[in-house]
Amino acid sequence: MGSWFDTHASAVFKAYSPSHFAALASFAGLVLLLYLCRHWFRQGRRSRNGRYVLAAVLVLSEITLNVWYVTGGIYNPKDTLPLELCSISLYLCIFMLLFRSRIVFQIAYFAGIGGAIQALLTPALYYGYPHFRFIEFFTAHIAIILAVLYMVWVEGFRPTLKSIVLTMGFLNALLIVVYLINAATGGNYMFLARKPDTASLLDVLGPYPWYLLSMEAVALVLFFILYLPFAAFPRTRAERTERQV
Image (cartoon, rainbow, N blue to C red; front, side, top):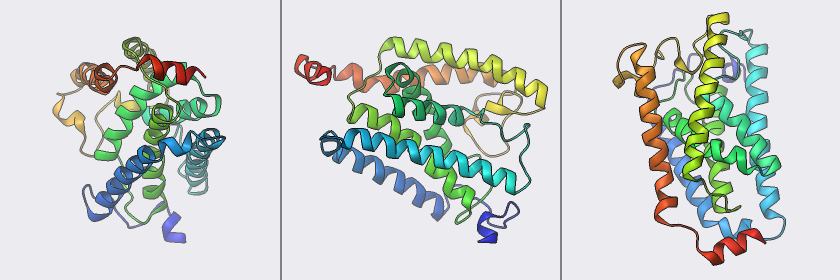
């Protein structure tokens, strides 16, 4: 138990190791299972209960992470505030799930899926399996994506082109706030001060600070890709009527 929760554990994360592939396989399996069970979740109170379960997973992930920070003596405003894109998406998803918020969904769909997928593929993670941080990291990021897909497949929510504009506006306003917090704390939240130490997409986007502009372009392209399924398969009138009931 001590080594599992120890901040100085020897288990070091290695990208695309067997444990990383197992986590990605679990992610793919859960997404497929959610899609196959989407009609089952729509029956009775299952839709609401499913939202509450996903919200509970996200809340528990965030609480246990902060308990780990504090008990391990590593809580530091420079490094441990919930100001990374996925941390912010996690809070958005909790609100979206609890209050069935369509406005928050518009942002969570693009920011949550875009950020969490990149995190799953190129984790900024230092602890390998079976360390607590490894399990918490993948649980939280998988739950973010499941939460958004749940709102699409079960609740019938859909993003629009205006959602992309809303998300880009939200993220750019957020960048200003996070930049100021980085300046005050000496942190590197959202990688606005420098690239992460681990391999990531930023490695091919140019040197600092130019990769920040490249990030904007990549985000915009990614958001349009995420919107393509909805553009290709617009909702029929019958489906619109069903969702309004």
